[in-house]
Length: 137
Image (cartoon, rainbow, N blue to C red; front, top):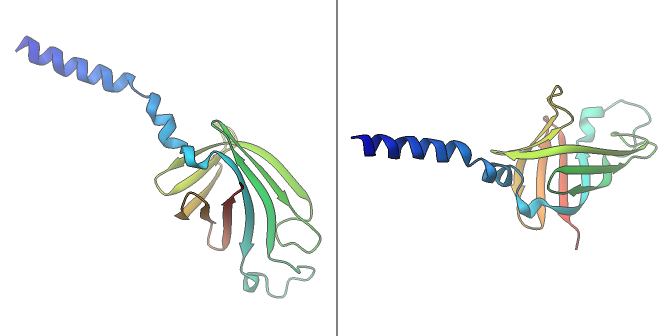
């Protein structure tokens, strides 16, 4: 009986101490690297808004083991931004979501993963913002 209890206790201790692979699961290796990015939205959502001439925005998203760097190249008439944006965040993948984390007190942005392959990832933010990532060679 003591041997059985010892085995159970050791199994619990080993499983509690083996959190090292959790990080790898949260940050898939296939995502690490530089990706060409294109944000898009439906023009119908902005019908009647003056000054908007384009509903896409190009950029580059670079994932490394700890952080993601997002560069988005806004321009005059772009629905997303008229300026270039450059921001680094922590990131993880959980279930069907890419979670971008600014700091522990800020929930961050959550993109739903709609489709993914080694070369392309389709993401959705809210109802009408889509991000397509294409792996740069």
